Image 1 (tube, each protein chain N blue to C red):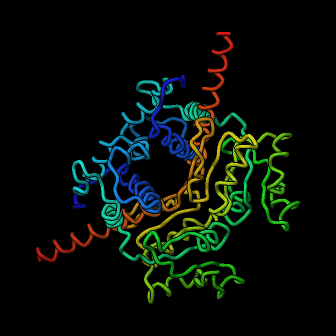
Image 2 (cartoon, rainbow over the protein chains, first blue to last red):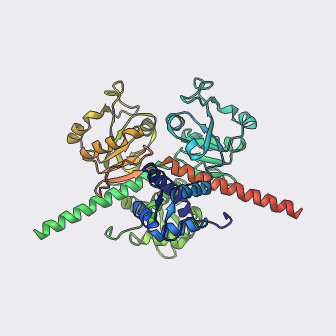
Image 3 (spheres, rainbow over the protein chains, first blue to last red):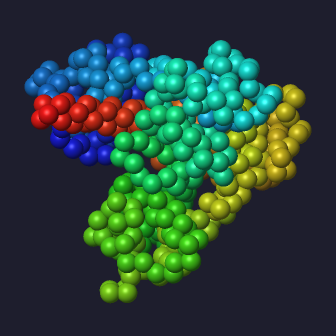
Amino acid sequence: MKNIKISNNVIRRMPRYLRKLDELQAQGIERISSNELGRQLSLTPSQIRQDFSCFGEFGQQGYGYNLTTLREEIAGILGMDRGYQVAVLGVGNIGRALLDHFDFETCGFHLAAAFDVEQKLIGTATKSGVPIYDAMEMGNFCKAHPIDVAVLCVPPERAKAAAQGAILAGVKAIWNFTNVVTGLPEDENVVTENIFFSDSLLALEYYMADTIDQESRRAARQKQTL
Amino acid sequence: MKNIKISNNVIRRMPRYLRKLDELQAQGIERISSNELGRQLSLTPSQIRQDFSCFGEFGQQGYGYNLTTLREEIAGILGMDRGYQVAVLGVGNIGRALLDHFDFETCGFHLAAAFDVEQKLIGTATKSGVPIYDAMEMGNFCKAHPIDVAVLCVPPERAKAAAQGAILAGVKAIWNFTNVVTGLPEDENVVTENIFFSDSLLALEYYMADTIDQESRRAARQKQTL
């Protein structure tokens, strides 16, 4: 099924669907039409049907989607049942925030360890009991406990070296919070997902400027009319 | 110019262009063709020309884009010259990470203040000298120093109340790091930009699972051939 290449936009909408389904299920809703789902997500019903049709047929004509079934399908598509092992590299503010507050388990990951270079952190554990090891020991650790995903939370100037170390240790994916590209040659076998805070803030800035400009124009028009 | 409605996908690509231009300029490059820009960004040249044409004509046929001019145009489109004032709400790990390490100025924002409910933080300042005030005082503070953007870094259970408080204090936009929706009625005059870490991690999970499955299939085929 996954042999066909599915567009990035479709993949990126899947987590949004999942969040919406969780919200609806928390409200006790069991079934939803593509019309209503579309309305709530600001998507057209045909867009929604098209997205799901990339992975097979989930809904039933005239009946809508059963939320439990649809959620299971999406979770399967996203690979949430794979039980990938995660390690956080760098226990600064961002690393700590993820270790203490981010729910890796719900996304289908197991948080196995954290690594840092700071002597006073090494040998301690996080609030929830995740051990913090010496970053130099990552390679050895991974021989006994293979890690699938490295969460990169090191300072930007260490991003490349940390990513290289993680790849040498055998990780299959890098979740990058350093706000810089790792600068490694693209390797189709290592998946990298960057979270660029600035991309989000700049989009916000555009929409702000746009909203404010529209209001000014509206105000100017009203003034002219008076 | 901004009267026409520009698609979300186009807007979301603008920060990516900006990062690439900064990278190219740092390498001393002054000019680039849409072909080369496309190759480096994994976009087609016609996609790039089409994106920019939403905002006017920047390039010159057969000459390519002048990086300085193009960067200025994109910065203008995004509103990076507006000097919006920012306050961070919640000085926990994420708030602290943004206050200490995120470069608001480069994105065109001025970081004016932070707010928290924790007595031991109130009255102190961050490393870079941003004052931390009592969250209860935000309304008063904003009367004297209007804040345009509230960066929501409070615990998820406080997200709604903090967003409401910020809107009452007159902010025009909310940059939401709480990983939950603020649950406020949609107000077209307040722009909200959510950073959902889980959306990014779930996309990573999909691409990992997909890559691993492809490798297994390839390995299985090779075994059959042998």
